[in-house]
Amino acid sequence: MSIRKAAGEWEPMLLGIEPRNCKVCQQGLYRDKTMLRGGWSRCAVCDEFVHYSCLASGKISFLKQRPRICKTCRTAEEQAKQASPPPSSQPAPVGS
Image 1: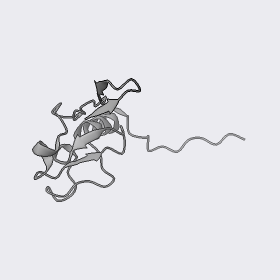
Image 2: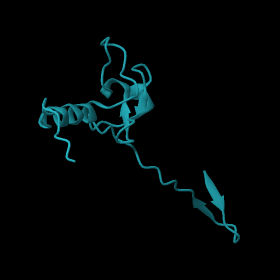
Image 3: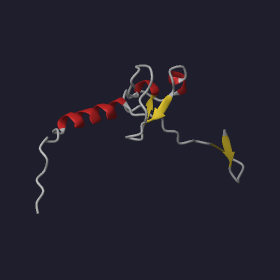
Image 4: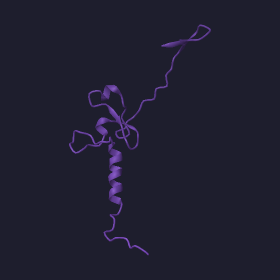
């Protein structure tokens, strides 16, 4: 395609298309790779596009967790839960 300038010359139309990559597997989010594999979705935590296969699994392995969370965000979430100390079982003293 091209756009005609006022002087009658032709200039090629260059569209600034930037390919997106999956945050988890670092592969391109192209229709030819993802059309029969579920496509892609946006992670609810990091707001990045990832392949459907790179989303965290739910209770049943082939179903995905709701809200949609990518595998890297889920592992970071699980590590944060494990790193935080459990709350003490003693009640806090009430001062008067």
